[in-house]
Image (cartoon, rainbow, N blue to C red; front, side):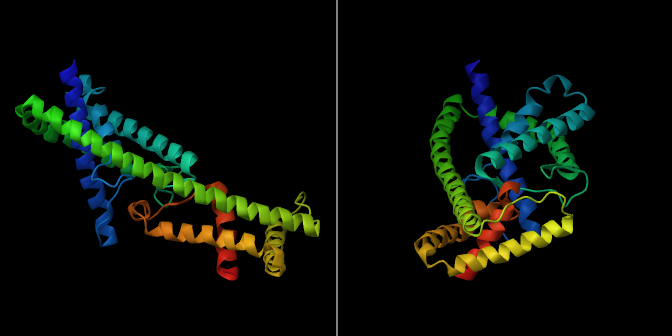
Amino acid sequence: MVEALVYAYFYLVLYSFLGWICESTYVSIPKGHFVNRGFFYGPYIPIYGFGSLIALYPLLPFQNNPLIIFFLGSFLCSVMEYITSWVMEKLFHMRWWDYSYRKYNINGRVCLLNSTLFGLMLLALVYVVHPFAKHLVTSIPFVYTVCFLGVFTIGWSIDFVFTLISLMRRKHVLEKMRADVEEFQAQFEANVQMGLSEIEQSKEERQARKEKRREEFELWVSQQENLQSRLNRFHENMENIVAMKKSHLSSAFPERHVSEEFKELKRIADEMHEKFK
């Protein structure tokens, strides 16, 4: 039992590494330069490792039927990708990948093309890659395998901590940006005594009022000398957001964008930062 768990963990590591190679290559070629894909700093993407284990263990009874491996495997991997996207967005206010521009997508989190590729990769894994990998892994003395996994786990744990710190820092600056803008807006509304009701207004009227309110808000901010210290703190936080564009996570996910609840606030914050810095 212990030996089986150790080998399962080794396959998780191995296929996380191979998945990183495939994903980084898939993204790097269109970009014309190398992209270190994945949340972690190291060369591994665990979602591929877990996806591989789905094909190697839960689907083990169906390995004599390639169609089941393809369709059920691609479905399970797509479910895992969808859940990962949703959880990461809710936790860190960021949509890390978005397939909205592709045909047959579901909320931009999964798409038919990627699901098909998942199925094809699982077929290659089950019938080509894994038999060779299994022979190679079982030929290595078991004690060496355990030692390697021990060292790897320590490194992966350190990587996980630094990645989590980076993600939490991103979350903090986004939440601070939202708090700053909402605080400015709240004081603006209180000063000019303008309501927010838009009942019985057409879409065009609402948009025109929204634009007019935004212009008045920006003018009001520029005239409030007593807000200077708060604006300075706001600009410092916005510079932190700009600096994050040079981080590993930003390079790994060039198509990322803030979640829907932050989009309008981010646009306002960017304009304020540009005009008043």
